[in-house]
Length: 179
Ligand SMILES: [Mg+2]
Ligand SMILES: [Zn+2]
Image 1 (cartoon, rainbow, N blue to C red):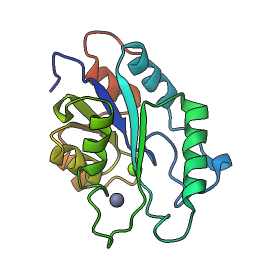
Image 2 (cartoon, rainbow, N blue to C red):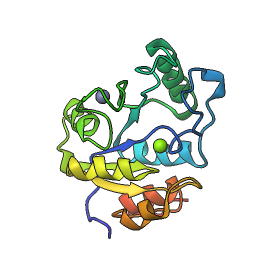
Image 3 (cartoon, protein in one colour):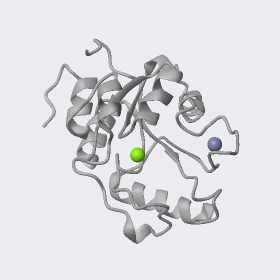
């Protein structure tokens, strides 16, 4: 299913969506973009669509990485993939009862508010079910880009599935070819 109007903002999960997942990574040198990430982001930027990152980083709550290390990794992501209009991380753990850890919608609703965009005008691209559940809970459009570790059930339950990031963006900007 495709919509006839662009989303006003696209929010990306970080690990295994924009960059290869290195569990609890605190090292900027270990950041490796996923295939087509830069091209997909630049296509959205050219179309005037705001782009953001919404990422669970419980390694901070767990004491495995510091908040400064997480920020340094996010800066490296921007060095490699270009500037983002908003970058929001949940630094809590699963037992912290926060309202932002995906699959809860807090990161998405907060990012939408910062961008002055209604959640209904936001698309969320991620690699696992909790990304899609967070999108649905925020009334945003979810598109799953599975990896080798995405569970079959998560793929079956996803509202939309794209082969890669460029394919996902093509679904959001359907009136023009994306290559
Ligand atoms: Mg992920
Ligand atoms: Zn949180």
